[in-house]
Length: 123
Image (tube, rainbow, N blue to C red; front, top):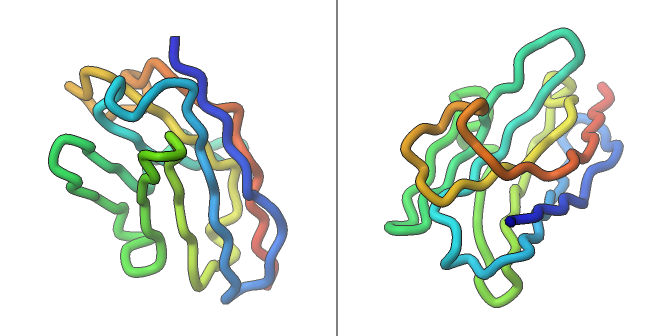
């Protein structure tokens, strides 16, 4: 069983930065992809960043391209989401999710989730 624990959320002003962490209970080699999602009340969970470990490829939603960076520290079994130039519309609960098979990147298909960390950006 994979357990994920997020940290690093908080409140910042527009233009500021935060780095979210997602610590895994298993070695990085046990999972094959990591995706960060975010969700605001009343809306569906949306994916913002994706990392495939097999080749290191990364993908970003258009709304965060150029501002967010997903990365991994294998020694710490921890994934990160560096968020720069934050905007009020980035305000949401952020979740990391992992999968072994990674046959689909839909939120519904990720079996392992963290508890979420709140990010609030004020204007």
